[in-house]
Image 1 (cartoon, rainbow, N blue to C red):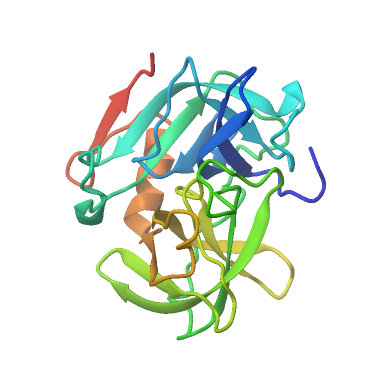
Image 2 (image 1 turned 90 degrees about the horizontal axis):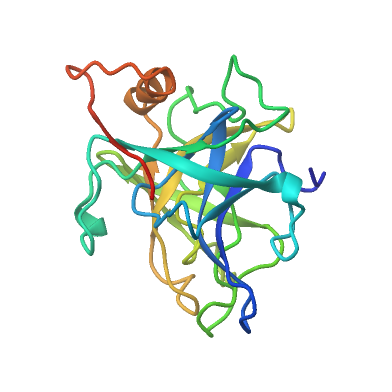
Length: 243
């Protein structure tokens, strides 16, 4: 794994052999178990066309050791309605890989959910991903980007961020499902959200970015879904075998 990329970061990619643009990034995620990663439920995934690239900086000619096949998805509460992302309450999914990722601790999440409350207003946070990089559609970052956003507010289970003044950057198409992170004083990270409503290239710095807040309920669901246990009094799950 490339040292410049955390081993728990996931890019969800469609490779297109022989085309001018060799790949398309449809989303991002973070590993939570050796065979499971967390992403946004609206990210389009298919067993035949989608590859999970784990812990690797570059997506162009990514080593085969970093590439994993997706074989199953579990949705938190319900799959969002196509074209109705703005009204989706629970935009989270667990994605199962066909083989385990080495180096992921089975006893804990590689990136723990924040337990110390919300960030301060305008506190700097970080977003990782490989989303669109230009006004031209389908131009994606060949290497992982780390960008700074500012915490703004929370409404129900959604966190809103703003772009720092004079910096034209923000979450873009292809960054959906990626983590909203705060860096601790010891250099480790804690996760506050999952990129849910992002911009298309050229508009990445306009308005708020929106993230599903990583709540204790979502944490509970992850703990139980990875073990195939469901308690419908707390949450429900829709499972899909990707074909």
